[in-house]
Image (tube, rainbow, N blue to C red):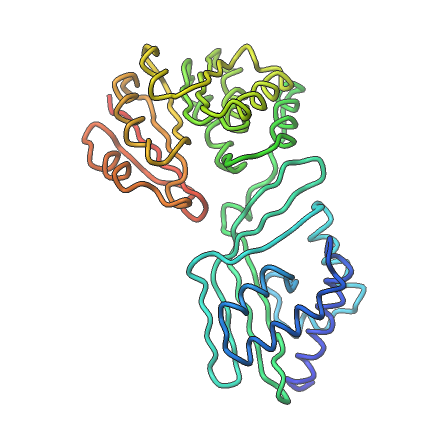
Length: 346
């Protein structure tokens, strides 16, 4: 099989697979493909990436060479795709900043990091990021996709959905995953928060930015074991109402105190010591939250802040947590939204 025949086989098989498994809009797939190829011939990078990621995704098997994929029967390909998509009722992909595009002669390459938004049945939407690379070859005057590869970041590839050890934990996880989301943390971030609360034996946790209660539910999951309590602050009354309902559904309302209003003002009423703080509210207020809460945090306590990479962290906050000799700060999950963990030294 020459390169042209291989390319034709791959593109035909991929379109067939996509139509068999794509949640919606599959009849427009061929049109989207034609538009992409026309844009590639014009070397219009922005349009190529926009159409490529907005309208459809070429499916591939990680670490398989094109020949391996082409050698599979149509039914074998369909089975692979069914396995990829069966847990999800929706799936969409968008490129992140820093995506690279280049055409050298008759070869076109698009690579970078893409954001995948997907949703399992009876679960809230989730977002992951993965590396991708697509290679295009011009054959007989037409551009064809000859290789497609994507791979999760190591931590996401290894992670599995949390397994509850009791009915109480199962209920919390189910409520959290079914809850509506608005600027909430990811599942992997939420699990870190739970671990920090439970591992440290936290008795008092403060959270700035309740939103719909997703992170609060995971905090409560850990605090059930420590006998501690969460005080969480939310300015938006509608989100606060959703959070209260979620806490009640999960059976953790006795573990959580939700305070509506301006957290900067309400914080003046709080007395220490505090074991763990989580900052995930308006980004311009991060530095002020830090200054207000630091005297309340016990020696050996921790201050965690979300969105250190996306949205971009406020430089004044990053400077404050990395130049204060009383704090030891590390950054985690920087392939995704990112978090800072600052230990208040003893």
